[in-house]
Length: 259
Image (cartoon, rainbow, N blue to C red; front, top):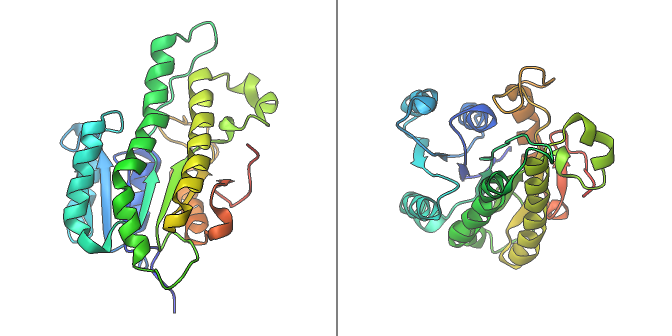
């Protein structure tokens, strides 16, 4: 008998692009989560209208949560709201999808741009992991009879990119000389490895996932993948993660990407 992907999931940056598509496919799946927490910076703003409409159709499953990945106080408040909803069951899965890409060559990248992108792409996911860790631990404890890791038990998925690979930089830098984005996502990969080591004794799986080059506001119209195709692949990978995958960087097809 097939099992649910997980009981509960938090998706950050869920008002558009890959984040919105993650929520849409999760709620449409008969084996999707019972509770979906859709985090976005401005739930009442015009950019969240489509998300709010989806949530209205699935009020028993989707809770829209104000969560600004660049604001630690917002993350803390979001963790309290989620805790009130899940209580002793905890939170099974976090998909750290929220991110920003401000393209910049060496010549036109300054301190403020680097710091702003780093704050969103690295510090934000770190604070999310820190503040939601107790809820992830509660979820993992529900499966104390088994030692294996999975997203059904407790996991953090950090959305990374092929452009974060230091090994492959020489192959693709000329096509995308994005200093802030590349450097911050490489740092996110190290955060992923650190969290994987730190949380493994709690039974929490942590890995990084490259969604591919996707037709979104960030990816542009020339990208070869639709959001639906990317997310379908991502969810297939996430569903089948096991303990051997903790601390790894995989793409949306499940292929390993070198650090």
